[in-house]
Image 1 (cartoon, helix red, strand yellow):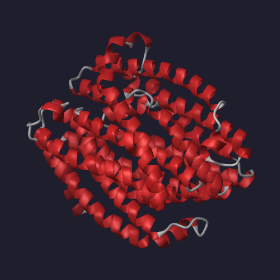
Image 2 (tube, helix red, strand yellow; image 1 turned 90 degrees about the horizontal axis):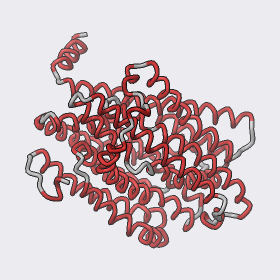
Image 3 (cartoon, rainbow, N blue to C red; image 1 turned 180 degrees about the vertical axis):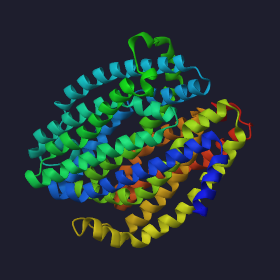
Image 4 (cartoon, rainbow, N blue to C red; image 1 turned 135 degrees about the vertical axis):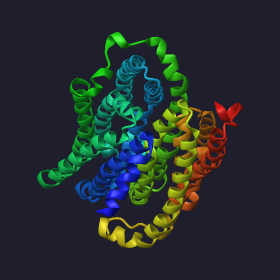
Length: 452
């Protein structure tokens, strides 16, 4: 009881921004813990439902259509920064105008994109693209069509998550995702008991349920909660604000487009060079070591908008202390990753049995990649709060340009280990440059390209 009392006393003495961050980290740990567990449980269920080859095809198609989620031209992240700034300055009407304008413009984008992709889908030779048998053609088109519809709907309603993050409540956004994942897991479990394996059913329920959950929650929040005052309405649409949203938003769009290109073409390269089975092997290793990365993301997520708030209130001392704490947390991740490498064979055996074999070399390479990805993500997240992201943009554009040819060559020469070369180097460059930039920003000695 004394420990709890002392902890509560220390918590009461810290600043309001730090309290929000701690609360959101705790909320996110609960939600992300459930999400990670459901993602781990859904893998063996899905593999047993459709077999490892179909599962590899499923992962590849999902990674392709996941690009759609970034075609909001960066408006979601632009809205996040602008709304956080407006809230910090108590300009609540302006915040609502940013929100309404974002929903309207993204809605227009989604309508055009949905029509274009559906027409394109029925004119693509999917078996040729993925190098699988022609007998899969009709099924692949149907699956891609379903994924497109739900990813576009998700894109249209995703600004609600950006609002929660701008309001320094990413923990609530995490719980919305967790509920969707749990319902998807339950549905797939039921499918394995009542129907034969079907990629079409998998696409319909696994991608559809989380989207519907986010849609229902956002409608409820805008109608019956305190977020009613931020609900998008036609009268609050201000097209002149698109320039403000797009100013930083387009840069976010290009950055995330490059990131999604670099990281999602991995599945395509592996499928073409090594086959769908290898896609499954790679993704299982990433899911396992990705647990450590997910923990880092949980911890750092609240600090993006918190840094925006602190920057506009000139609270540099808090930001310096926070950066140091996050760097120490990354050092702790080194130990966690090392332990994960040691127990990897045992974990794989318990998790997926002998249905897929994952070598020690892939595990070690993936562990190293996750470490580099984590420290790069820490600096990116904090810098994003300032909105000075021009250098990030340059780094990712350069790596996106070289990604496809180098990945194909390295995959042929070194197998699965080769595809990790480009993404590892990209995050390594971002970590080094990000460290320099955040130090300059926090010392108020940031000029030129470093401050754009």
